[in-house]
Image (cartoon, rainbow, N blue to C red; front, top):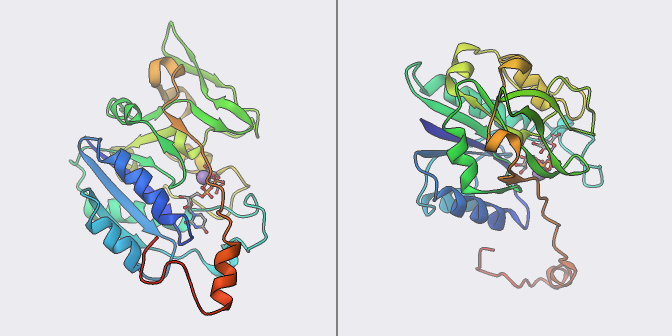
Length: 253
Ligand code: UGA
Ligand code: MN
């Protein structure tokens, strides 16, 4: 199958660094198709040129988060869901352009996480929905489905953060067989759910808990980490900008 990785991204000082880290992992993955969706009204030059030079097979989309759902500068990040508009735009693209006979796996790959190439070799086994541990998320070293190693079935979750969620998983902790998304054309993400319920929202529309397929050695291996990049200190740059100068004149960073 082709692995379709859906990545929402937005303009900020670290954007090109994040996309570089991701793309250079993805270059090691066979049959990979990146769907990069900018949180912007229009595709930017930076991302357009970046993708052209990436060496990857990709689809470049733009879908701006509506202003009333956009995080304010000083809002804590749990206040509003992120990536909803962009992931839904990507799902629309898949449903519009792919055929029912196309074989694929769909994975939601945020631009700040860290991915091992081993994660992608696990995904190709997925019949419906595959799940695995995610490192450094939900207040834990590892948040994971609990896998019975006799039956190789998911019998619970170790999540400590909102454990009552229908699917207490991070976005990076699962991937979906394309067929399920094409067979359930109304399954989308929604703004109208509690914080942390995005993953449950899409999954409950397409799968039941007992159908989940545990991967990564019965959920004992970590191949993805929910890293978050610290915003850089640009105080000196700000002073330069006040004087009408900048360190990166004519240089894309
Ligand atoms: C957690 C989950 O890991 C996310 O998948 C989930 O979308 C998010 O919570 C949520 O509850 O909405 P977190 O690290 O807090 O993740 O989220 P971010 O990494 O800040 O954002 C997720 C994705 O949306 C990233 O790819 C980011 O680039 C993108 N994003 C973020 C935008 O496109 N626009 C924004 O204004 C902010
Ligand atoms: Mn993140």
